Length: 187
Length: 187
Image 1 (cartoon, each protein chain N blue to C red):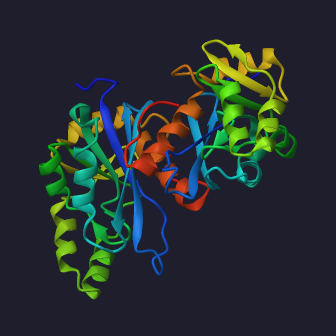
Image 2: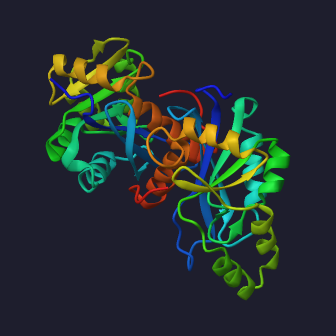
């Protein structure tokens, strides 16, 4: 069983201009369950680069909330376009389960074709390593270091106000509000 | 009477280096009462400058939540050091009541002496124009465009999780988390 107050972090990136921006802002929101915001973290990663895993591990491991954290929610498996996150490595280095939340069933073959075209075969293997996409409630997810049944329970606690975990919804609002001046769309 | 779901905005600035930074980030958090976050706004203002009033008016008036907003909470009367906000002008141009929330009873004479020393007499008059500091619950406040009794009621609705209105607490966490990498201290 999980406590209602379980500490989780939701991570999302900011909007960016793929023709102009070299870096993208990445925001982490630490919450107890899906209600109380404990703190806000941020880092930067290269647009279409390959430093996202390293940056997320550093951001999470050095933060003061680390000893209490129990789960990482990611909004999709990449930040800054094709800066694909190695969720196996993220799980290993933080010792935390990773739940990649995906709103729509992703078109994996299409993503793979694009990555192949731009010669990024290593990123294809990162996506494959992240495991099958499973449906949980109204969202899709890829799970690392956590059983399906436990992911269902944690998502139930964290999705207090919408279909996605509240820390992910807030990370999205913050990242877009800070970079664009006003938050837009939804996580 | 005010609805529990009353739309309010809390505004705070980020930490900055007064010897190095020319601009400070200013974050606005739009909430319904003290629980649901509707959106995040941001703008920038000059450190020790005098553009804060203009910047806040633009940020608030152009945002999509404007028609629903009922009250502005400010964390102190200045952003970016001595970029003092003209609350009378802010109230007039947004047509919204302004509640300046102050954690400790401010040492007004000391602030005035500092402003006089750096030849900023206009800012002294802005502070005077903001009216008397009143005690409401556990915080101090300066009220513009709102009666004391109504301010008490709105603060009661908005202070859901701490002594300060929740949108101010979140604006503080976000502004410091984005600029410093990890949120620190309290609003």
